[in-house]
Image 1 (cartoon, rainbow, N blue to C red):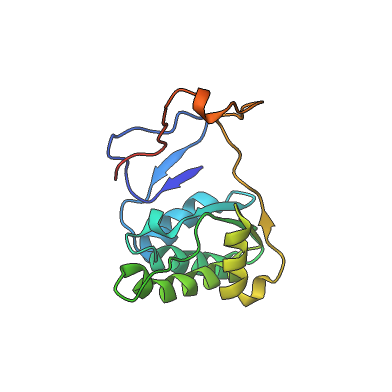
Image 2 (tube, rainbow, N blue to C red):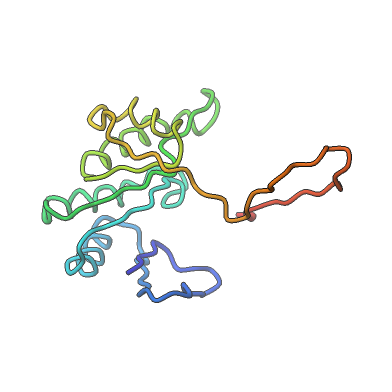
Amino acid sequence: VFLESIPRSDGGTLEAAFELHCLGIRTIKSFQKKFIELVAACNGVILHYSGYGYDHNGAPTWLIGGLESFRSRYPRMPIVTVFHEIFATGSIWQRAFWNSKRQKSLARRLSDISTTIVTNSEHHAEQLRSCCKNVGTHIECTPVFSNVGELNELGDINSRAPRVVVFGGSS
């Protein structure tokens, strides 16, 4: 079961054998209602957490509040959180500086209710250890594999054609 927080702009759906549900409104109450309805019959929850994926300031209080409420209702349900980003940093004149404290607080709260914590880099694991004292060393660090593949041999740079590949899109 997949739960999206907002509908896709293209109206598309996942091309897989999973049910796709849309939250619609990003509030604790709407999340609790939909999430509990969908997850009550499941064996566990896997949350891929990237704060900016759920909130334009990288601080989805509605999501964390809803998960805390879920955790108090279902204390034995495994929650695996895969942290893709933890908190932003920046200079005092940048928005990241002002959002960082709230993002750290939410990461701490999310780590408190998670039974397993996974991240994709040692840098993120260190960020988690610095702001979430309860995690200690119990963080699984699993790098993201390349879906492009690797060259067996990298030729001399002067003999290669000048090419560039950009992954991602504009937002």
